Image 1 (cartoon, one colour):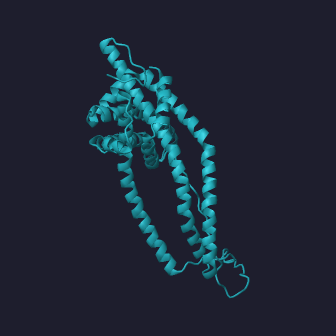
Image 2: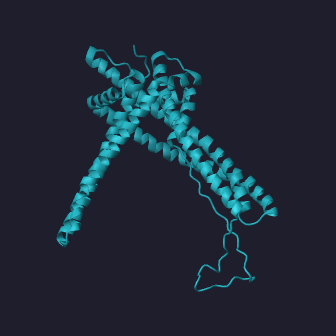
Length: 352
């Protein structure tokens, strides 16, 4: 398997197949590959006191500091906003799950179709490919694998913690021995979980493509993915290492762009936020101007950050998905070589 050719072809697809960008952006938004977190600041106002200068009370060490006062009306509004945001987050999680698997299925099938026929599908055609039973089965597969891995990990951690039961006794040497054994077992379980997680992730990458392209069931796709990884372990691991290196390089290269986006977003959002807060400050005091400023600035900041951030993350998603789809196709070609004695087609050539 020529891994370099696969990466080159994946790069070419990413640059030239622009309809994939939309699905890459949606996938980046719903999986959090490119995310930006911003910290907020809170304002405070001094509480009204009988003295011009508040006096320090040794029984109440914070009495000398200005107190934050929020009116009951503002408190009710904030509670309502919190409830509304919680409902919105729940809705976004559900919608995001649908969008994620539709986008992932569309990326896999569009790249495969492009490799088979050379045709570049439209965004509408991509949504038709993504909106399929394969997307639902892919979600089910990830759910079953994730739950199975979590249950197995918790059981192993519980077993590793069993030596700690010696603390129920009054024997100090047993306490020390049990703790050492338990810590050693827990570290061993964590190490094994990391290795197993990497192996399972590699299998799932192939299983998703078996599900999307060969229309297999969940168990058959996992079995197919396991067989392909086991039979071509060296090629699969090498591709995984190379993709990890590419991902690390991508993070390093995009850090300056991310910082520039954040700074630009802070400037673009900060100016109208300060203006709105200053105007409200003429008529109201306390935290009200700060709340208004936050409501004005936060949406602007998020829009300015999310759109270019999603594009950057989308390119990475398109490249990664394309590379693994090409790897899957190349692995199938190698299996055809073993079965028929034919020469494998290079990455990017149509498969018959």
